[in-house]
Image (cartoon, rainbow, N blue to C red; front, side, top):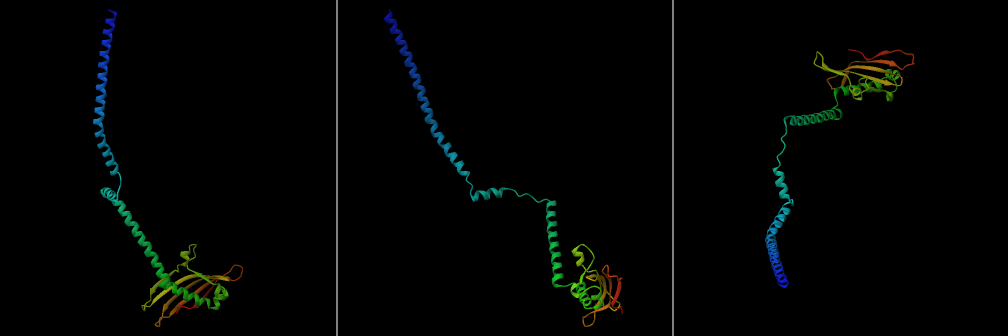
Length: 223
């Protein structure tokens, strides 16, 4: 009885083991089948990844296509007006510089011509050199100002007399080691084109400590 019972127990255990092995075998086959089915599907995915990776490579054609699609920012009214004002201001500055270059270096203004002519005449007059200083020591300028530009400007007036002759009236300052002076002159051109004076007057002021007082010199009397 015991032997038969043991044999029956062994037989049942063998059947259970065989069933369990069969179940494991089926599960293993299913895993192999699933793996076999999964491998062909992964290959296209890798191909897609390679295509997507290749598409990331930027070429000149792709860059041009991308930039052409970027819309340009429209220029506002205020911005456009500011650009126009800047351009106009630049042209204005350029015209101003060209005007001063042409008038200073090429076309000498009439007032400057009269100023130079009168200064050379005064430097050769002994009445001036005695009271102001030697010809090489006399300095002249326009307006008494700390501004260099203002000092270079010669105050003047241009007008025509009753006969239609154009006159130029100028005023400027002179200074030397012996004193200073204020020059007033009225000039015009004669029939031959030479500069002539209606009057030329210099108010001289001696240097401090000289003991002399101011004096008016009529270099050329009014006609």
